[in-house]
Amino acid sequence: METPADLLVHDAELLATVDADRREIAGGWVAVTGGVVSGIGGPADPQPGAARRIDARGCLVTPGLVNTHHHLYQNLTRAFAPALTGGLFDWLVTLYPLWARLDEEAAHVSAYVGLTELALSGCTTSTDHLYVHPRGAGDLISAEVAAARELGVRFHPTRGSMSLSVKDGGLPPDSVVQDDDEILADSQRLVDLHHDRSPTAMTRIALAPCSPFSVSTGLMTRTAELAETLDVRLHTHLAETQDEDAFCLETLGRRPVDLLEDVGWMTDRVWLAHVVWPSATEVERLGAARVGAAHCPSSNMILGSGLAPVAELRAAGAPVGLGVDGSSSADAASLWLEARTAMLQGKLRHGAAAMSARDALEMATRGGAACLGRTGEIGELSVGACGDLAVWALDGVRFAGALSDPVEAWLRCGPVAARHTVVAGRPVVEDGVPVHPGLDEQLAVHRRVSAAIQAAV
Image (cartoon, rainbow, N blue to C red; front, side):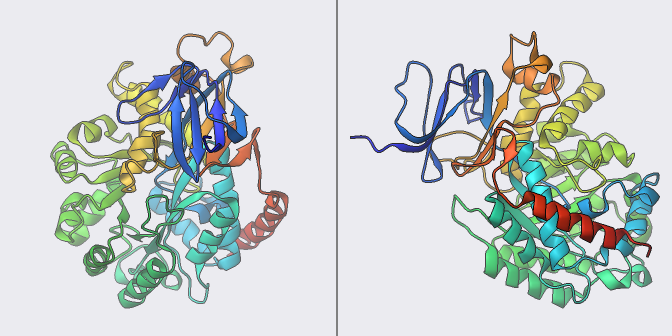
């Protein structure tokens, strides 16, 4: 007798697998057993028995969405009034002194709230870039990992770092920078403590010096060497603004992409946040090296950074995923919103036919998986892949009349949150509500911690 699956999601209006063949199955079903996809089929295929069933009639089922760039701690300073009218550099200088108040409680509660917010938008895997490590703040990354484990979401925190303060010609204050040896030692400690290399890993660590204007070239080089030794991925901000181009040319005598090559980062181990201002030649170089890009459309608009050359990067061979970014990203952490905005920006940049909802879905899933080095593991629904998926209701006023194409309707209509978000076969959002019982308590903690951080500096 066949062993029943742990979970069966059945009778979908459309199952968009985003697998290698981009199969879409009307009336499709997907089974998950032991945390991985154990079967996929359509109306003509017999469904397995299951311990738990989710009825997906009238719904689009997709792989769980993958968030490739975030600063979870920044939800503690969301829509902070004094920082709302400047570009990136002004925004950072205003907020650095507040972020210097981070501690383990702040890191935990911001991760808990931020990851819950992402799960409501169908996100099942998120990165995080925590680069502010004030003296005496404690183990902020481990506090984030604890929150992700409580919630049951897949998590790729990066050990961010800053080593150049104002006195060294950088932007951050002395209180939030560390020296290179301290950063590298803690990077190794966190990889040893948390990094899981298995194909179904719930936690992986990457190394992430913050940006060309906040770390030394020496730290960038040594971090790349450490990542090679430890076999982990590398992440940083790059080519986000024209101010960054000017800074790099003035202080380092080279453009950001040239700097990337100089410090040993032009490899497929790397994915970059933003990548708004590479030249056409630099786009080709990034693509040839298979350097990934985390496209953050809302953040790029709200800070006035610009429109990233997404179609060009993808055509050149660079994996492109989506990121909600931190508090600068319209102060909302919805992967659905970023997918829709990416679609609209693509049309704005190159014409109505240039970016479809399927292109945006692919970036939000397979593209993100490629950025994180997890092609075939996450970001697709195929037998053996992680059992991460989102169920999207296509009903009610928002979808009235949207009958011809469920994938296009998913992004053109809305706004939309996931009805169910499933990680490793276990719901983390059910009927639009987070399943973990601690949310109200954590929101109260978040309010208290946020108020203390935003108090006058």
